[in-house]
Image (tube, rainbow, N blue to C red):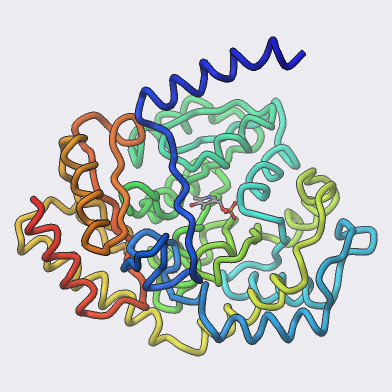
Length: 388
Ligand SMILES: *Cc1c(COP(=O)(O)O)cnc(C)c1O
């Protein structure tokens, strides 16, 4: 049988390698952090989602070790058979409270949360309005569900309103958007979305994976940042980025909706419990973030400093506030060369070009962390200036 499949796979792989889209995996010889070791080299790291510097921290290791001793390694069960410990319930309560919702439910990832979400309560008589640049997990979640879909142009509120008008007769109307979009670091217009949702009676769902823990005054997320903490109905997010970066995801929202997900959501029901060590250490991360606003302050100070320095140096940096900062170089070849040269100087950044981003908008995406020092950012800015 495989003799038949092999040439098909080989030809698919050849296409990927030829197109230059092959994703090379660099092997880290160190923990995640401000500096990572790859091969024999050391690199200043500007491409992790480790916004608050918790992921590879000693602090998290210590908590995790204690958690393993107390709760054991694994549960070998789904939640509703014998896979729920007190730590899972605590994490759900603490998460819901942190993002300002009534209740929350854990998943093994945010990808898994999104895939198991829509189909649990929506069907043929319903409709989902989805931003054109939403994360792949939202797109796949919508695919799992029989509801009609309307994809609105990225952040285009007129286009969204047109759709809401056109489908006003549907039973459940649900607007779903990333809180922050990962390629540009642009922030969804949640206030306008909530206004439209009120006007047309729609539910608002925000995937806040690139925001939970640091956006908004208390780090609750994009909805706090936009002043609509209570008006956004549902938050989906990950523990795999700012909240320690191990794994796990959640959906937080009204208690009836969360209760229904516990009954119906297939990626919750038919998938193993979050490892207790991940639950306990993520719980610690939320608590730590609440008590240490300095982490967020440092992140924002670093982000502001980098954006200011780059703008002063004459680079095109799209206006936003987020620690994801795309530096638009335009030319794809130049972008790739620049990323390579950066590596030679011990700076780890990633270049993106068409078709991942639009034609002629090739860019180097920089991600700032609270762990970075002023001199790290100076080094990065200098490298951009010298290499351009
Ligand atoms: C990273 C990300 C996810 C996936 O989160 P995992 O927990 O790693 O599955 C989902 N949605 C968005 C918007 C993301 O940025």
